[in-house]
Length: 142
Image (cartoon, rainbow, N blue to C red; front, side, top):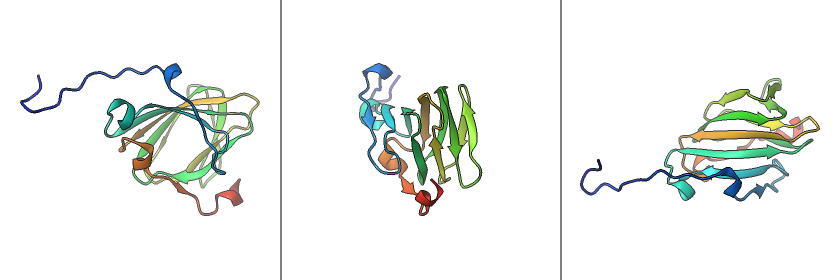
């Protein structure tokens, strides 16, 4: 039961098929298809974000970091390489990876099928709040 003066929140349900897709055009993430399913603006989430991401064959989201959020990426379909400052690691359907706040990371689809992931950010209600910093030498590592 809400306290006096407290705003009552309701459950917000969004189906992924009803969320508009955005095709990224920045050079470090060109071709990445993103759907922001749950965030502050669309569902009132204050410190968590859920999005789906489709990385077409041959595409890469180069090294970057989020200074204000930690992240989990879960592979729904396909396979991809999780990138870091170390060696790439293969992720297959059903695999999940935790990315600590501020850790350099990226993803490459080196297969002939789209890689579809669910991504959870904790600590921010919007991607802008999560922050985004490109690795200073990311294009050298591509």
